[in-house]
Each structure stands twice: as structure tokens, then as C-alpha cells.
Length: 201
Image 1 (cartoon, rainbow, N blue to C red):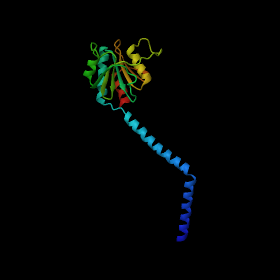
Image 2: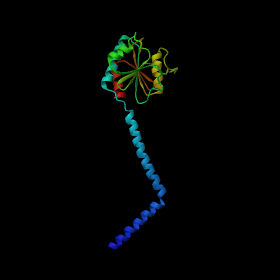
Image 3: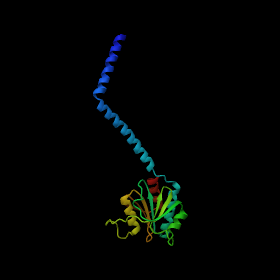
Image 4: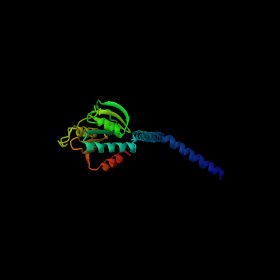
């Protein structure tokens, strides 16, 4: 019985060895594919982790409350919030800044007599990184003629990137939320907060 088991074991060992020799190219391809998929998965995960946007609730509250003030005062405003896509190739000029977001600093930037109020404020995560930024303007003929340069600039950026743009009209005080080429008029300030929380948190 012991001898028989040795013979059977030797036989199967030989068969396995023969299969490895015969199918060596296929086995090699299989392991290469397996390894490449594992590394690809790790690469995708690492990219995803790096692209996660870290926005604090306090930042959102400051933006929302500031927009409410700007809307009431009919102060012209253009705020850009970077999401996953880097905006550096789509934004021209502007003044570099490194400031935490709060209501007083946003009010001082967009104050009508401030030298910084023209152009866009660019926000990355919880900081203002640029003021007076110039955005690519949209020439889409479907945009209503009543919308000015701020709206066209916001829509233009949304045509090229995944950024969020918030515009306050200095003529009407209306707040527009622009993302993915779609403009939503904010009729209630709480709706602005809900949209930001949905897209950022």
C-alpha cells in the first residue's frame, strides 16, 4: 500500500511537471497578467486617494454665508472651487494667495472698491490660492444674452473642467451654481449649502 502511494505520488508529480513544461508560456502570461492587474489596482487606488477633496464644513458655511451677504448687497462675485481636476492649465494671470477661507476675507476681496474684486477667486480645499483669476469664456450661443462676463467665464471653465463655480450677479443679486456646463439658480440660500455639501463632503 505504501509502495502504491509512492508510485501514484511520483506519477502525479511527473504529470504536473510535464504540464508546467508544456504550458510554460501560458502559465508565464497568466502570472504576468495577475501581477499587472494587482499593480494596476494599487495604482488606481493611489490616484483616487490623491484626488479626494478635503473640504471642511466650516469652509462651506463661510462660502454660503458670504454669498448670502453678496446677494443682498448685489455684489458681483465669481468663486471657483477646484475638485479633482487641476485648474492651472485653464486659469490665466491672477494674484497668488494663501489664505484660509472666512467671511471677512471674502468680503474684503469682493468689496466693490477693492483692487482684487475683478476676476475669480480660486479655492483649493480650504484655502484661497488665487484672486483676480481670468477664466476661459464660453461662446456657447445657447447662453442667454442677459448673462454677463462672470457667468460666461464660469460656464467656460465648467465646459473644460469639473470645477464648481458660484456667481453672484451685481445686477440682480441672483446666485448661480455652475457645474458640468449646467447652471442652477439658487432660490434659497440653504439650497446652496446642500449642493456644496453634496459635491464636496
